[in-house]
Length: 360
Image (cartoon, rainbow, N blue to C red; front, top):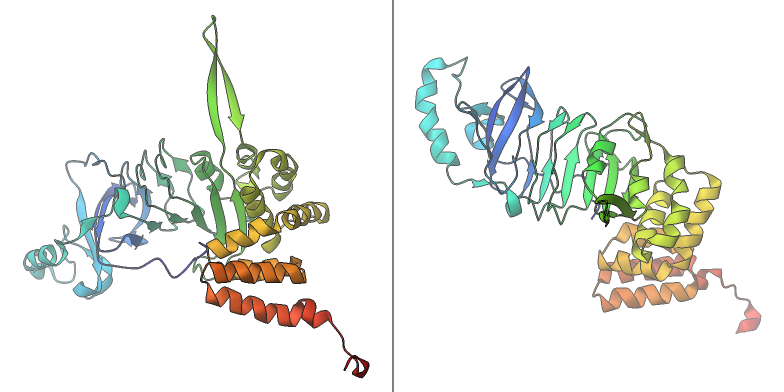
């Protein structure tokens, strides 16, 4: 699903907000499209907080006083205007302008629950309040800045489609990634990108894990059990920075616990973006990937991920090319099969053959 730029759209929005110190707290968002990028500032205030139940299907408890902030080109201002504060330059026009805004934005839907699929939070956000994304069952991508420092409870409960987190920052800097990972136990692909999100600087896959409590009778004590290497992988941080060596050390145990798909995802993600990857760990990842190459190819074909498929070609034999081409044809993926035939011609068994005139 890797797509860091094309999906997020700046659209017409009606944002409910309130002041939070020197910043702004977003309480509710109304818009036209389930893929949304929130503004960086509201009325000159940086957006620093996402309120409790902001994108949840459940209605948040709104304060007695809150404000509307409108964005969209229809008002002649792509960065938005506040309909509840006078226009400093044209205060006399303020009252007459409000009904026009209300009529223009009255059709917007509440971007909450299953009506939101991807969200880009401003880089200035530092706080996510309780259950901000609760029951967002179709939310598949969340893009955040590096500055998140406080996260409430039940943040991603029932976010059953969430599979990709875009972190707009360097993998070498301190970020709020470890806090976010603590709140989400399912499979998650994390992409580090620059603020413009036009390239991928680093990537890591964190497999799911689950935990349960066993009661020890008759003392009514409980024993905590955890299954899945994803728990330990989520602990591979030091001072908010990724510790790649600790992360890679988890893979040996993951080979005993994780599914072939999870192992492939861990391995080819590290090999494609080998930041901090040492030779010994690289060899183990390559060994595991080669042993599960058919699974990796099936994943690339299923997701129609051409870049992944081309990356896997470096491990192909001539027979592997043939099987991968057949898989693309069976999936009706013409682009994949065409590129594989081109790669096979250039790098496969045909390219390695040599001929002499004695052969004819």
